Length: 164
Image (cartoon, rainbow, N blue to C red; front, side):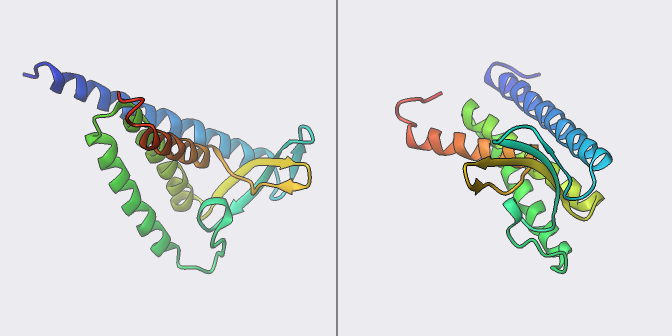
């Protein structure tokens, strides 16, 4: 039987796991939609700032090491190791803010790992331009990872002011 704080922690961990599953589902559905409805490198112009563009990524975030000839098994093992480590941090972290941030990072990492395992590459499609600057295309999983990381950095920088 659980009492007090232990029960709250387990409920919060259940919420985090359910959120991970939901975020992965949304990520995979959007990627499947893009793959089904777009040809590779096809774009749907929305405005001067944003387009949907079907890109594949064999490397890491934002196309780093984007080479299909690299040994994908090594990349998958590295990513899986990071997922396990971040997942443990997510479960043991007592800060609700950091716990949710680690949850987002875990969901994003799993979403992109699923792409590698099921497709052999990661589907990217969110394509932003600001004036003459083009940001590399990315996906929702990349967004989860980036948002989670930013929240952790803000929490670390302002920990004394915003302690939860």
